[in-house]
Length: 85
Picture 1 (cartoon, rainbow, N blue to C red):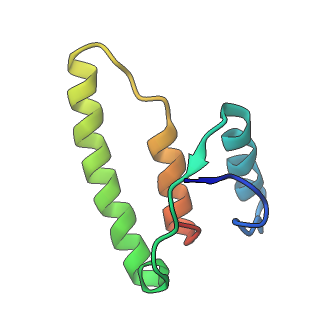
Picture 2: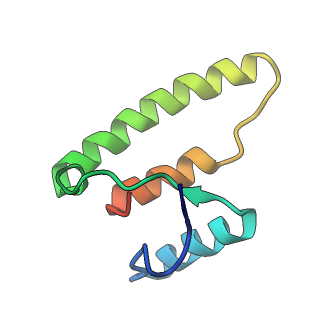
């Protein structure tokens, strides 16, 4: 996994900077980069939607036994949506 650094992501908006700072503060790593064709406009949106469904299912399963999400999945989905991984 890649560590979050400014050479991997292109921080173009204030929201991107907040996203970056949150990841650094919590010590999170972005997922490994996908092939270039998977980071194209329509494909990355489908990947993000798929991750949303899978993460919601897994979060529900973990909450049944008393464990709650940390926010990493939302953070990683934003990176997928932006095409960084």
